[in-house]
Figure 1 (tube, rainbow, N blue to C red):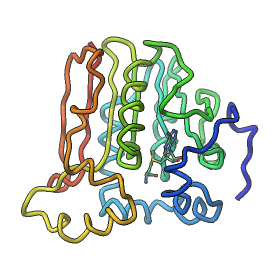
Figure 2: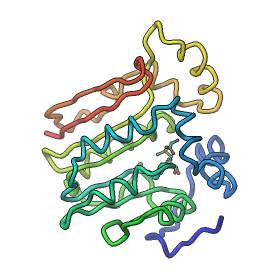
Figure 3: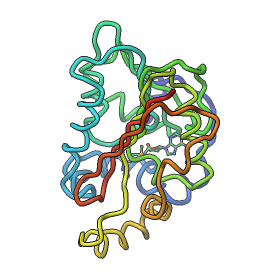
Length: 235
Ligand SMILES: C[S@@+](CC[C@H](N)C(=O)[O-])C[C@H]1O[C@@H](n2cnc3c(N)ncnc32)[C@H](O)[C@@H]1O
């Protein structure tokens, strides 16, 4: 797969070493993009919960999505095109990712392009103003980042959000004690995704910046606790 650099605002930011070393097989190698850009495969990795989790995000965002929206990092599958299709006349979506091939892959999936801007950016240092967005989304991003990167990503996601705006996070969580996922899937995942166990042993709330007021926070668990959606309203 070729990288179409005209698809996005390009900076010359380096790929973080954790991505290069740990996730080259999932996001960086062109064949990986070709392999993983299959909804059934992503659905399999999410144990059949892909549509359910995307629907939960779309329900949070609304049938008609207004205002300024930011998705922090691309994702395989059709979530971003579905968000774009719901944007109303004033609605706009920015999507950032650090890996150019991910942005050009996303560009190829979009059916609505005029209301969507793609940028090569690092989630640790977003090139956006404070309080700029009504909604920010991190979809299965945090479990792929080492702790120091994750903490900066959360801080940036809240910085660019306006007071009253919502940060939506969808990610892994600690399955309930009786859930077989804990004994079968978690050990496999922790080999492939070495930072993911942080999400089983800790709570996202612990990693939020202390200097940002939080007006509300709602955590919803799915599939016996295996997944979580967190909606955080900035104060
Ligand atoms: C959001 S996660 C989604 C994973 C999930 N398996 C999926 O596709 O549904 C993967 C994306 O995060 C991006 N990413 C990881 N670290 C990043 C960072 N520091 N800044 C920007 N993008 C990052 C990767 O390049 C990749 O495109």
